Image (cartoon, rainbow, N blue to C red; front, side, top):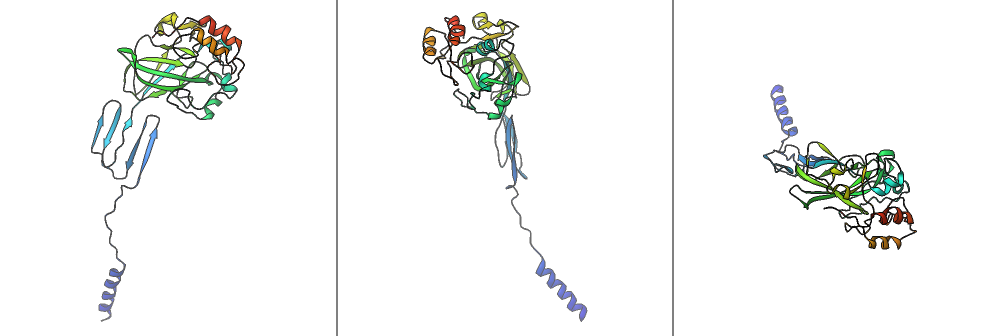
Length: 288
């Protein structure tokens, strides 16, 4: 009898303390991972049904999907006549940086920004100014396919907004004419299309020879030491250095700020900007 009661009690206790596990959705747990090349979202247990790519983006199709943008990587090299002439060396003068005049927001149309700490770099890696990169159709250099702000270092390297990394632009691997523009210097463009890809960084030196840029000696100035620099003086950014540029700079003489009239980029608009840089270059223009 006692044994029977014990068995009944055991069954009762099992009934009282047992539990039922219902099916649950585990897809609410996940993560977003990213690096300089792109980002991906995923959820726990997510099934990837298929993967599609068009050369520019990769798309994993499943319960959740987000395109991963592939970017070509490039490291252009260019020099500006103004700050290079001021320094008297093989690196450009970084007075705008050292005088805390460089803005953390690009003066160009995309309005990219950088951290103020980027301007703490000194020496060859000191930031001189913002620069504007254009990538153009390999069959027609007048067709701009992409453009982006970047930063120019004292030794001519053009880098991403973190002040160190190669520039990355969201285009597929292909050949492009590479153009460089600056707010008070004449722009330049590569003589030939350059092959760029998403898996490695391509260096494009537009300063070591006149043949590197379209227009040759009409596009750059020989600064000595094997450096050919972009030409200073295009205050109104119309691709020509004219008397109107001189007249505009005269109106701003004496100011000390980040301004296009400061052609040598020492932080001040002075007669030397006109006499040493602008007037000698009147009549010059972009070659593309």
